[in-house]
Length: 587
Ligand SMILES: CC(=O)N[C@@H](CC(=O)O)C(=O)NC[C@H](CC1(C(=O)N[C@@H](Cc2ccc(O)cc2)C(=O)O)CCCC1)C(=O)O
Ligand SMILES: [Zn+2]
Image 1 (cartoon, protein in one colour):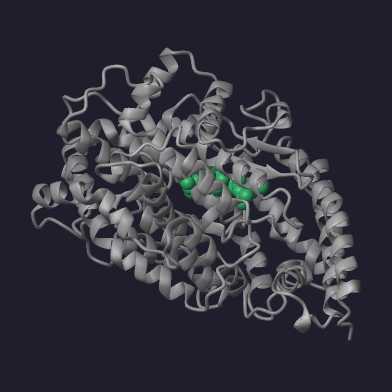
Image 2 (cartoon, rainbow, N blue to C red):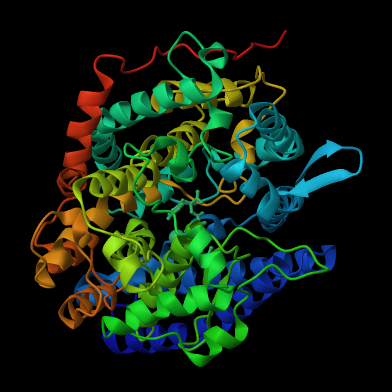
């Protein structure tokens, strides 16, 4: 076969030109559906997705005709990525069409799901039910909403997911891999990846157990011990979030020193008449302060920064690369809350990464690994959310630095970051076992609650059975979006933060660092981001931090003062038993 470098270069040039228009067209069709959910737009998106998959198959076949062994590393890496197309490699076009239809059907069920409290009183997740979980302390109402959401989403998806599942086990539709999970893990380019994340999770478990014990004890005071199971689990509907994945909306109940100013600036944002646009301008201003690339004209012109009236949209926030080097958009049903300020930074972090690598060959326009892409925006938020920075931008006017506020701040950050770790870890533990065929359709919910009870120490507030399909109540399962990237990001973002704070000349504890206005930090971050996925992620990590492996140490250093406080406050009332209360086997 063909080892001619000249011809290979011509092929890559053709690929890079044609792929930009092909992928641009695909993103436009997906954007049209996501910002206007109709049957017609769904059909059109599935059709264009199939055409894109078939074009990728054709290019993969043409790439396979080259013998790349004599090519330089960059060319070899491009050929590898052109051939590595996963699900799109499926040659049975009818099956591929069916797969994409099942996925878009599940996405529609999730995105149009509503919780009904009475006949004509039905509310969507965003913003109504999300706000309910953030603000209500009425456990009966929360329990109804918790069950109602799962009845309206997961329960309706079980058969669709079972069909989808049949495409993902061997002989997997993602050609060349044992199953879909193996394909997803391959993006981390290390065959010990699953052991790596397990090691990190075990290392971080003690922090989580201490936080869990403190929160359980406070919530027992708030709601009375009677609704808490003897096993030590926290009922999942009491944690301020539909999935109990982050607990920072419970700050008012959980501050160690409640007399100090509240660090959740939502009220101040509303008082200052913040708009969705203003929220994104605050984020854009931070990137500019680092000397990084500001949001281009088309971003402000074409993004959807708030929920439109009169049509159904996918409200789950997302950032979009239209692969033409200048069209990048965010879609977010922005609410005026601190959580949405954080989300805006997260989404803009994706856009900044898109901008930094926009001149790379198309196959390198990706994160160094998926966790890198998820960490960019959150690293900026670690600076933005410090009381010092919030005071600087006028959102925390009566802030005085003292020890008690410091502990309160660390508690607020732990409720967002530490609380998330077992959740970020367990979603793909469940999915990888499903894709391997270890978890069968008849055990979907039992396997889910074994992980939720065992690793997260939460229990279902109403009995569950295999009539339910609780994984489907979380966006990323019907959305078929891998999730371990967020666990990886929560570890990496503290490694990045520590490195950038050093470059910015920060002195003192890591949790007080704000890299705002540091062009040195901005330069170092930009240099790493601009590489995209052109080199293995350990090289990118080394360029930014000097390390070549993920390490939980910076995260643990950041929270050390809080861990000391929690150990003193908790005594030995820590942990929970493995059996899952109120998981009723089919009657
Ligand atoms: C075209 C496309 O799909 N693009 C990708 C990006 C890309 O691949 O280029 C994309 O936009 N994905 C959407 C997804 C949205 C969010 C999410 O799902 N977050 C997790 C976990 C979490 C929560 C808080 C947090 O601070 C960090 C993570 C959850 O909500 O459970 C919801 C709000 C935050 C991020 C995202 O932005 O990652
Ligand atoms: Zn993200």
